[in-house]
Image 1 (cartoon, rainbow, N blue to C red):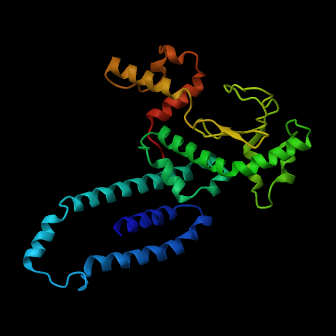
Image 2: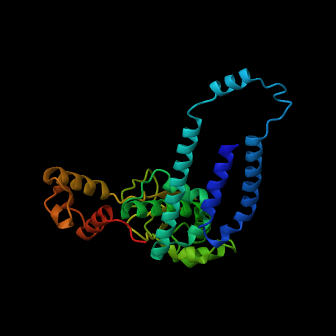
Length: 290
C-alpha cells in the first residue's frame, strides 16, 4: 500500500508543472491519492479481531522479532530517492521555461512519465546535462508525432510520383484536422532522401523529411516515404572527445581547464568546428542558469 501511495504522489507532484492541457489530470489523480492515503492510514492503525482473536505478550514479542529491522531505513531511503527524482524533473522544467528557444510544439504530447524518464539516470549538474535531457525529451515528443508525419509524407510522395514533396505544404491535405501546423515548421524537406553517415542498403534513399535541430543537444528524426523513420542521438558526437581532452588536461595540470583555448593543443579537437567545440566545452564546464 505504501508503494502505491508513493507512486501516486510522484505522479501528482510531476503533474504540477506540466502544461495546462495536462493539469486537468490532477483532479482525478488527487481523488486516487486521497483514497490511497485513507486506506494506508487504516491499514496502519487497524488491528481486526478476526485476524488476531488472541494476542498474548509472547506472540507480540515474536511478531516484533520477526519484523524486518531495516524496513524503516529502507522506506526512508526509497522516499528520499523519489524526492530527488521529482526534484530533478522540476528543475528541468524550470530550465526549459528560461530557454523557450529550446521548445518545440510536439512537447505538448509528452506525459509526466516522459519527464521523469529523461531525468531518471541524469545527475543534472552541468548545462550540458540539462540540454541533453531536454534533447531526449524532444526526441520522445517527435517520436509521438512521427506516425502522423510519416503517414502524410507517404501520401504526399505518392501524389508526387515517388519524388520528395516540393514543400512542407504538400503534406497539409493529408494531416488530421487536430494536427498542430506549427509542428510542420520544425521540419525541412530533404530532396536527396539521403542522410549523412547512414548507408542505404539497396534502392534509392527516401528520407524526404528531417527535423530542424533547435540545439546542439537534440534528438532529431528523419522520416521515410515508406512510413518509417530513424533518429539521431541527443548527445553531440564531438562531446566524448572534448570530455577526454578535459580529463587529459586535468591529469596533466592538476586542475581542469578554465577556458576552451587551453585545449588548443589537443589533437582530437583540431579537426572540429571550433565554435561548436567551444560551445560544448562551455556547456560541459558551466552550471545551468535558471
